[in-house]
Every structure is written in structure tokens, then in C-alpha cells.
Length: 432
Image 1 (cartoon, rainbow, N blue to C red):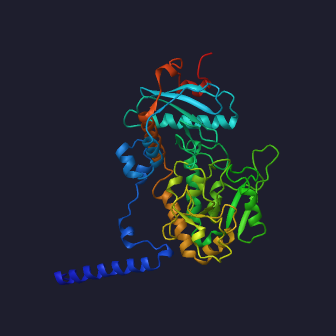
Image 2 (cartoon, rainbow, N blue to C red):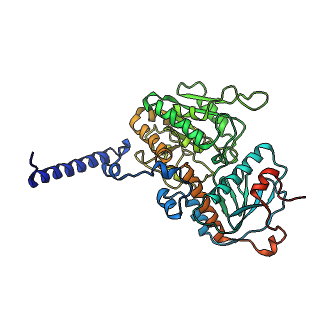
Image 3 (cartoon, rainbow, N blue to C red):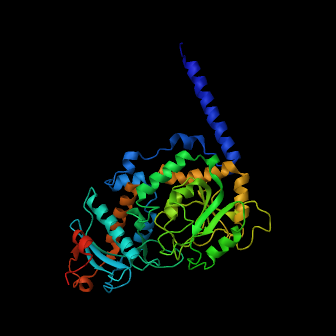
């Protein structure tokens, strides 16, 4: 068959018309979650090899994970600050040094509980791994971090409240090393189990209910009735699988708990903050499920990548959209369209939770697209990958070293500290 220029021109014209018509269709039903054909054609995801590579350089990290280090960039933009030395027994605090490519511990709280020790050492393991896998030397610096839920000024913490002014820096959660519980484990193990669930459970076969398990009394400082109100709003509802955990006598497990990957078997996952943040969030983000939550008060290091659809923008009955409903606020200034969102924010008292679920059930295509965009961040873009974690840590260390000023007079008695390799065995920051 001879293909002439005239035939090629006709084919090209046909393709152009098809592209235009598809995009007009997508725009005309913007609430349905239909992506533009152009975006489908040009979307390029990182390779599996890159996502597992802990030795990406700065340029590779930025290209592979655009927007990942926003929290660090914002913190650096605040400018230089004086880093004061804290008492050695400050609760939950670690003071350390990076020098000549080695990690040293200057002080660490020795009164920590077993769980606090897990969290403290998991962070140090992550820092050490980021140093030893770096393709270029990291700058010498003195740093401090706190594992206490409430963030600490001039320190690295697991979260921060953007409404509270101050110099707060966010580090990755300790679970990026391991969360030593039988139903979680290491991050890659948990993500692998979640991927298995997702492969075996297509959207239409997922349980068409909201799911939550938690401790009722463990509430956010900004919403002390968060969890009791959730239980009240879902009691006896056919669309909800919501239960307070029934702890066994030794507190090592609960009779009605479910594995972290089993949340992904549901179409909708309820996220509730703890005293500040909740470490479950990254694992829920790995599911192709819709996270439904009141607007979070505390941001973890990837929370800024949420694109919320506020329930107050949905076409409920007038009585459902109360004046206290979830809408843009100082922490979350933008509401996204259903065709753009990857999470749904509801009323802080859960007043419109049922209407939100009913709306999602009535718009299954929209619902699946929201869930897919959330899953995409983890499964395709590698938000929780090994490479993303170490890229973030090295960016944090470099950014911190540019603005943290540790005056010699304040730190002269600290010395170099104890090398991490030794501290990891002795759990002592000195030889006393």
C-alpha cells in the first residue's frame, strides 16, 4: 500500500480533530475527572530504578520529585537563625552533628520510653543512610530534632501547624525506617502489601463504605471532640465501618484492628489527626481510595501535595451546607475542582459526612478519579519511595546548614559527640 502525502495529511487532520473534540468533551464535563488527552500523552513517571535509587544527586532529585521539598524551601526562605544548645535531658530531643561525612550524637534524652526510643533511633538511621548514600559530601552542620508530637522551634519535627508562626522544620516520619508493629513494619513492606491489595481489588469491587479504626480519647488539640463526633455521626449507618479499637489487656493489639493494607479494600478512608498529626496518613495516601478528613491542622513533609475538594463546594441540600462546613481557611487557601482533587475535606464536626458519601456514590466516575489521583502520587510518582525519602533528607540537611548558626561559644562544651555507629550500640552520647 502506497501512502501519499495527501493521505498523511488527512490522517494528521483526523488526529488533530480527534484531540480537539476529546479535550472539548473533557472540559465540558470538568466535574467527571476526565483528564485531557494531552496530559495523557505527555505524562512521564519516574522509572522503578530511579525510585529505588538512594544516590540521586540534587538535580536528579529535583527533576524526579518536583515540589517535594516545598517545606524546606519555605523554611530556608525565612533566613538565618541562632541555634542554641538545649539541656541534654530535654524530653524527646536529640542534638547531633554532621562532620566530614559522619554522624555524631551530642545529646539524647535517656528517659525516653521504649516507643520514643524506636522513633528516635529510626530517625537517626534515616539520617545516617542519607549521609552514606549521598553522591556528594553533605555540609558540616549541627542539628536538633524532636520526636514529641508538638513541634519545637528551631528543630526538625514530624509536623507543623502553618497557623502558628515560628521556625519549624519538617522531617520525614520515623516509619520511613520502620514502624515496629506486626501490621505495619518497614515502609517498603507496607507499600508492597498495599500494591498487592490494589492489584487484587479493582475499584468496583472495593467495599462501598468509609472505614476507620482508632482510639476515641486520642484527639487533636484543635478539635478535642474529633473522634467522639465521628463515632456519633457513623453509628448504625450502612455506609460506615467505623469502630473504636478494643485493646487487649497488654495493649499490644486490638481485637478489631485491621492491617494497614486492608484499609485499601474500602473506597473511602477516614483520616483523623492525633494530638497533632497522625502517622497513618502516608499509608492511607498509598491506597486507591478517597481520604475523607476535616482540613488537617498539622502538615507532614508531603501533606502540601494534597489537593482538597471542600465539601462546602458540593451541591448538597441547603441544610447540609452549614456555616461551619469545610471551606478554604488560613491553612488551606485553595479548593480544587472534582476533576483536580485527590482528597476531600469535610465539616470538622462530620456534619456533612453522610451527604459527602452519598454524593460520591452518586458520582462513581468522579470518585474513582479522585482516588486514582491520590494513588498516583505514591504508585507512579514515588512520593513515598526510597529515593524520595533520601532526597528529602539531604535537601533538609543542606537547607538547614545554610541558615542554622551554631555559635562556637554556645556549643564549645559539646565536643564532637559520639559516632552513630557507637551510639547505636551503647545508646549513650558520652562515656560517663
